[in-house]
Image (cartoon, rainbow, N blue to C red):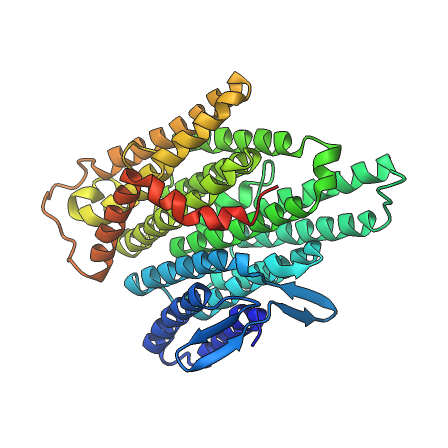
Length: 462
């Protein structure tokens, strides 16, 4: 038995099997959810490179697979990360069932996670860029309705990711010519510039942020939220592992200082944009930009910041999921997601509005919500940096909070005369209420969440 086969190849095989069952949507949905939970369970109980005994079964899961001359390597320490990834995938699949999301989410979602894990496990690590290139093409297919061409946001996303992949592979080629002992300073500087440019394209770092807001506005909200969450955090894992294995980068430049500065810039850009957007879908894209900035700031605050990042990853998955599910419900109800068409909807769809606002205010760090103690921790860690760092961090969070208040004002407007709810209580509304309670609970006991993700953070310290 082999770990990459269990958590990469087998999910892909199941996904291709589900693609053949296009005429059985209910089976596809529940098979997708069951598969995600099954692989999470395997990550929880099966050790890697150690003998295991499960009932009558006894064996050993090898951690290495050679694929076209490259190694895919999973270690026993990676199991908490696999567990977290597949649990979050199961959560999004559960939301997809509750929101009657198109069935292509389930097979393509399984393949997407397999590509993310492949990018994380491949050695040398820079080959991960190739797998994220494949993931980009898969994401464009997921975002594009079968009867319509890809939107301009999806095409821009594709172009930027291809450029990012080319930059990273070219930087790796240049690095192969570098002898770190003789020190060709000019070649090393070019390599680092290309590598930084490549990750900027992949992550949507300024000035390459436009694809995020365009994709959020032009594409189905739930599918866009799924891509934002898993693709961007997959690339962040790639970047974090690359830095943890490339100590020479940290010796040549203040990489952590650069990452922190870029993260603060992204927080401010997203926070300012949140004050002025007039489309609630684009507002989700702005929230993603702010959250990306926070993740970069967390990376820069080693070693404690990595633990906060993985805790934020869990909260972000819940908040972005409920946000995109509410947007999907509103899109079915009113068709257009600009503010004038949403005015007064909280009066007729209060639970869906609660889900939308719960997602926004959680990512904005409203007190008592799940994001507040984590954002507070990041702000506290920034006290050892220049004073302007904490100021920029506060400004960005404040901007997203103001954007949430604007959205609340629009949703509770008086354009609709009727005050009674026209929203039937069903699976979607029950799911929204449950997630809101979970987000509130995690805000009250953040130490439990930090303790749970601590084993995941330990494997990616540098």
